[in-house]
Image (cartoon, rainbow, N blue to C red; front, side, top):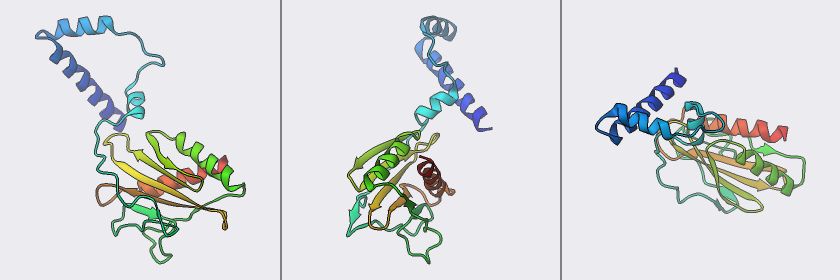
Length: 187
């Protein structure tokens, strides 16, 4: 159903572009399509959506991003955040940190490669023990802020993933961290 909706929206956008270019849409589409060059790989609506969101509901970058007193920011009371540093009693927000058996530098290099390999992701800042990335949802363009903090004494990488906007994330932040954990462990 989602693929149909995406395809239909792409069709509507192409139709609107043709109509806006000329008083006679038949001529406009003939002129435009005659000058189009084939894309490689072949263009599909799914490919277009994988690269950029249709809408952009990014909100403002939080001012609480970063490490304070050796910790990532606490999750808000809304259910759209998970953190490995949340109290154990906070089941709504608590998630396990990533673990590693390599050197701390190798662990951060692996983590960075995993993050860079994910779609619609941009690393905003990094240091030898911290990484901050923004993840953008495919259709609506919501931005989630994801932070990682290396704890070399415990061979852990703490994580915090939070939506910028809204109340619920339908479990997206938790699923994302688990996907990162799986890819990180497999690397």
